[in-house]
Length: 73
Image (tube, rainbow, N blue to C red; front, side):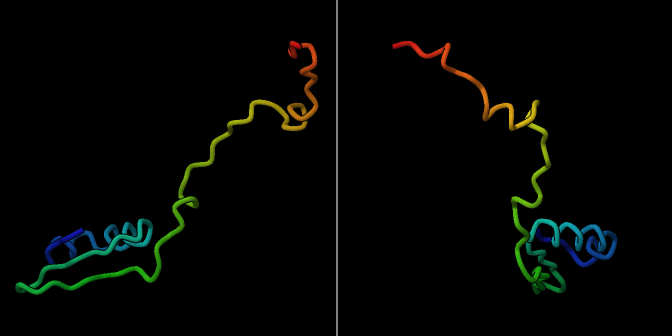
């Protein structure tokens, strides 16, 4: 992401928070020179995934299902 110093000043907290959340480097252009804000480490992508409730039943019930009636020899 590349910004001017003025736009950084207007949104500094949003820009810094987004950089920390995404791990994205922020480049600021000031008097023709580029400065970079680089987060110390990239965040874990799996950590940011939303938690979903995909199991509609107790997992133990799935383990103990009797499928013998479905088998065809």
